[in-house]
Image 1 (cartoon, one colour):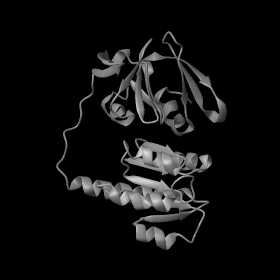
Image 2 (cartoon, rainbow, N blue to C red):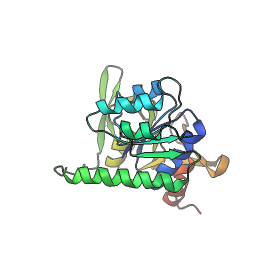
Image 3 (cartoon, rainbow, N blue to C red):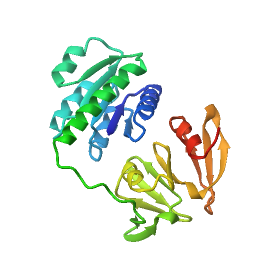
Image 4 (cartoon, rainbow, N blue to C red):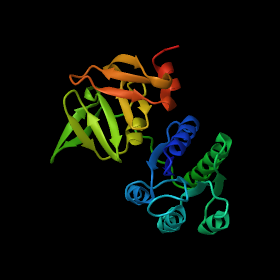
Length: 245
């Protein structure tokens, strides 16, 4: 599921991301902090579900909600706001939910389940697709040239502002598919999602350093000694993957 979170309060975005990731670990999440970022995100990221604030810099939530009508497949739109007075307008725009701050986890989870149910229902009405096989190589770009990379030579993969980068021992390539797509075609025994913006090759992890709030930083064995964070959303699955108590 592709989920867009838009709110100018960083802690609200963090809370929503945490709830979403705990409930749907494989969700592809895009976070925006103002209306302008939302518009830019929609040029390459078409969400299935949107958690949208109303009062934001740039376009407000109601203006953005009106723009969703131009998307071929209307997303499951849920307003998350501190204002009660826009509920009727939200319904007229086509919102499926209206959650007041401060919210409970259960309110967000209820909308996640509803959106997931609607998405699965739509999927059942379309022809089934053939599952993708695990890849042994990928084609990535460096400048104007394309290179075939062996999966075992990939140290880590990152996603920065919707651009995916493939990191090897000494070079950084760009890649066209999303981080979630690569996660789905790489073996989970080899690659681990440790952060919403990072996939790491387990075979390249050299050191695990304890960090703040029970999180970790992974030091890789590439020549640059790359350090990659393990966010709190992924700590539990990380500890299980590495057999840590």
